[in-house]
Length: 324
Image 1 (tube, rainbow, N blue to C red):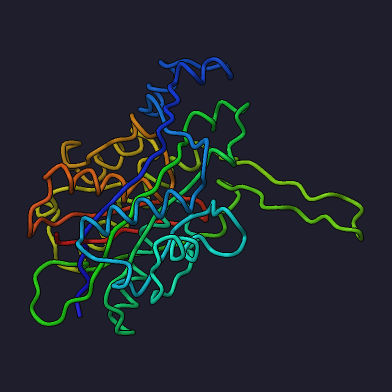
Image 2: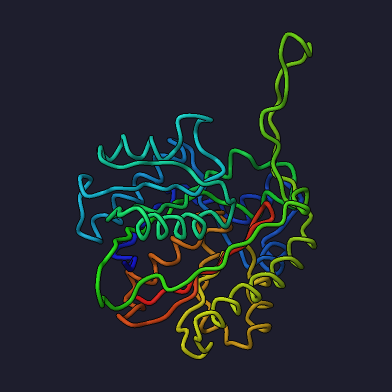
């Protein structure tokens, strides 16, 4: 059994928030943000949340793939900002789509969430005999950002991306070839967001919620080391030469991080597509949104080999080698 991506879709909110807009609420500027991150604007939700974005991205992916709700066996949503503790975003997406045959659950891998979900879907299709899956990365980070903290509020945006994957028997060309995933919980405090805190009649306190906190330099050093390592491992494990890879579709966290990864891999930035200028860091959504842009822009041809690679809180990281 081989798992192939047969369709992609994405959704971002209509509301554009520019760097100039943020300069009106915190001590920053367009130049400060662009030179440090490569971000010019981001999309921010002012309506329905994560599940609605995920469902719309899924609809567009299903339309692109030519499949209906009745065809879906699995729905996996990579997210850390589901609308509810329960039910899961995946179950809400299932209900919205009417995919009554599907099993659905969320995967919490932060910005690596889509890579983790894609690998999980591949494993389920290979091992359990499921046929068609929806893999979604969606995050509404604007609700967990401290908008008075200029070191973090300038980085993030909201969005969702989706891929339809399908299992094929026999000698079918293409598909997900291999993946390498990793976690290091010893570095958990480097990038985190406090959940609802303890608070009840015994403690005499009310629960509180937290905001994103980040040690930027630590995240930078982690990303530029781990991402090239896991990419190299996938290439070595499969006997694939780096010259065979058309695009490295990387998590859009920071333009300078992607530049540093390119240098370590010794590849041109022409092979590392970027859209961070328009959307900022949308966490689990960055890779599938970018993949959808490449797909719909006619930049992927059958037989092309690409690497999808992300990193995020946990700390987590992963890379997947895919033949289109």
